[in-house]
Structure formats: structure tokens, C-alpha cells
Length: 431
Image 1 (tube, rainbow, N blue to C red):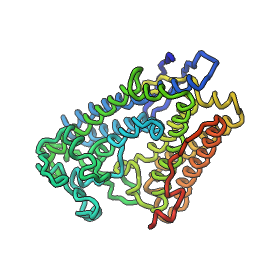
Image 2 (cartoon, one colour):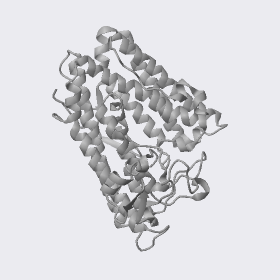
Image 3 (cartoon, one colour):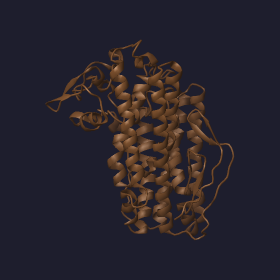
Image 4 (tube, one colour):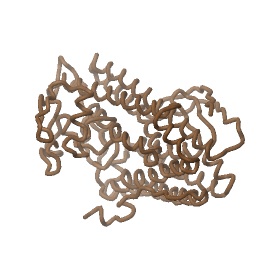
């Protein structure tokens, strides 16, 4: 299916990319089939991963500027570029769960939470110095020229993308040893958030990257790690962007399925992200524990936007549309139109549920603009803040119930949506 794109002007304010004017081109075909919906779903994937790659490359340029002239201004610009890079990537997460090639890859770029002491210095008062579960809990690669990993001595004197990917990522088989991806870069740009559930993000100084006025030691190696991790992120995103091009592995695997299996893939991703992952593991769990360590973008306090764009990605896939970072719109055959041909009321219900979720996410964004970021909202005794988070969770659960009705309406079999103890078995969270 040919994509018809028309550029529009767009504004960038903080993390949000918003249209300044609208100009859309819709799919010219009035006939919507399961096959056309699946093909267009792949087209959106190609676009969103391509945008993720482009914004990561922009982040790399901002990091170059930071390292060439380490000031608070260039550090702020690099942080802004990181936040902007999250916008398209989070909209890609709806492609998880249903597409095995994405699930197998995703941990390299967006794994969390992480034991950040593996990477760099941490505050021992809040972090501690050891863990019974992780021998590398406070290994501090940046200050170490060698480490014992899996009983073997590993040379870490040169910090490269290969070292991070092959030796450090999930070292010793510990999932919390996250050495690559967005959150490793986030930690390097912000440092630890030591404010708990009070307002405030990480406060790493620009001088941590200054060779002439170095603070906290090993500025040369910290610079090397930041560059290597960002280059690795770009390489990983390039791999996935290529996977969704015509002839790419992800697109081929999707289109080799029957159209009905393709629809199952789409709905599995929608429901699993909304319910088990976003509603449960990323939101309800942190609310139950009142624990800022369960915050997705915990160093930058950008979680409100990450959740907003995760939810937006689900809506994109259902409506068959995506607003690209260059300001153009991609629109085509949609699951919404397919459902509407069989049950217009159910389609209207789903659209309303998606709008309710977006409104609940926007309420979190609005609260963050007033200093009530996600970690503040989940604080114990913050009754109003807790309710904002719970409303978001409830909207995602409600949305998922309608997704299940769509699965039934389309007579799709064998779909199992991801769950979460925080939603399905809350008592287990405290065991």
C-alpha cells in the first residue's frame, strides 16, 4: 500500500510534538479488508521506528555539542533531545507482545528498572553498596578497568558499543544489569533522582563531562560510555527500522501470516500493552508500592510523557494513523473502520475508551507541568495524586475490556493478553 504524506508545520514544546496546522491525506480506497489493515499497520511500524532512529541521531548530535562544550546549557539541550527521542519510540511499544522479533529486541533499548550502580557512581546513602541478587550492583564500569563477570575477568578498559552489548547488558544473567538503551543514557544525562516522592529529577552537573574541570572522577570514561551507549542505541534502532521496511524480517513475518492472524497480532499488542504492561507493571505497581523506583523514566521525571505516548501508540494503531516528527500524517486502512463495518456501536465505544485514556494521560501531563510528576503523584498520602494515577489505570483496564469485545466480534482465536499481579493478584505484590 502506498503511503501518501503531506508535510505540515509542527511545534516542539518540551517533549510534546504538536501540530501547528493540520493537513492530512487519507487513504483513497474506501474498501477496508483485514489484509489492508495489517499492511497499513506495518507501514506505521516502519514510520515510527524510522522516526525513533532520526530522533536518536539528533540526540547524538546534542551529545556531541555537550562533550565539545560541557555547560549547563548544552547539558539541558541534550536532555531535551533525549525527551524528544522518547516521543516516537514510546508510540512503537504497541508493536510488542504480538511481534516476536520486537519482543526479542526490545530489552536492548528500553529495559528497566536498572541497577544504575553498574554504570557509574551512586549515592551510597540511598542506593547502598551491595545486593544479594546482583554481584555487579555497584560495579561502576566507568571507574573500573576490569570486572569479574560470570566468573571471568572482563577487560573494560575501553568502553565500546560492543563491550556494552556483549558483556555488560544483563551481565551475570541479572535483568537489572541494564547497560544499554534509553534508560542507561537517561541516567548518564540526569544522574540519580534523590528526591524520592518529592518534586525534582536527577541533578548531574555538566562538569561530570568536563575534561578540564572534572567532577566525580573519570570524566573521560563517562564521556566514552555516553557516546558508546548512544551509538549502540542508534545501531539497534536502525536494525528495527530496517526490519519493518518492505522485505524486512518483521514485515515479512507479519505478512506471511493469514490476515486473521495479523489482526490477532495487532490486538495482542494493543491489549497487552494497555493492560499488563502500561496499566499494571508501569503504573499500578508503583501506585501500590508508592515507590519512585517503579517509575519508568525515573531519572528524568519524564514518565508522564512516556505513558501518554504509550497510550497514544495504541490509539494510532486502532485508528490507522500516525503523526510523524516531520509534521506529516500517515493515514490508511484501520482496525476502527474494519470493526465499524460489522459493529458501528462497538467501534464508537472503542474510540470513546481510547479518548478517555488519552484524557487521563493528559491529566497526568497537566499535573506534571505544575510540579506533580509521576513520582510525586504516587506518594503515600497524596490522595488527589493517587486518584489521578488510578483513573489512568482504570481507563486502560476499561479500554482492554472493549479490546476483548473486538477480539470476540472478529472471531479471533487463541489470543492471550499479558497480565500483571498488580491487577490480577494484588496480594502477591506484597509477598
